[in-house]
Structures are given as structure tokens and as C-alpha cells.
Image 1: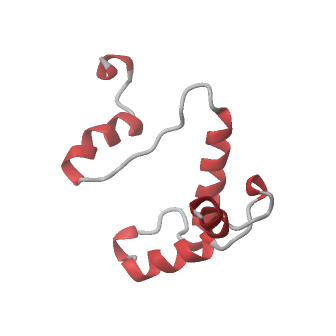
Image 2: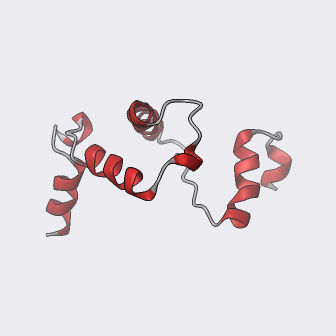
Length: 93
């Protein structure tokens, strides 16, 4: 049914690649507009390290881990200016 609703777009193309590549995709929930803003902000933060047009095949796992650590240690307004890593630790305790 989803195929009939969506034109061939990057969104639909990603859905086709999902089982082939073993990748996970996350989409904003309906009626949750705040999730899109967070997603766009995160994309902007990632672009600081991986500019648009960069071939991500050249990025190593160590580089990805380093960027993830930097971003998870960066305070976020949506978390009361607490880094995500600290917020996660607080929630898990």
C-alpha cells in the first residue's frame, strides 16, 4: 500500500534499499512536528564534520565514533543545555 501512496522519491528508494543493505531508517512520527526540527538540526551538526557531497565511503568507523562522541557531549537546548550523553546516564540510573 505504501508503494501506491509514494512517488518514486528518495524516501521510497530508501525503503527499497533497507532490506538489501541491512540499514535502519528512522522517520518522524505523524503529528510530531518537533521531531523534524531535531532531525534537521542534527543533520546540520553532522554537516560540520561531513560536508554535503562528501563521499561517505571514505569515512572510517573511528571517525564516525569520534563525531558521535563529540555530538553526544555537546549541550542541547531541547535537553535544558545538558549533553545527550549525560541525560542518557541520568535516565538509565
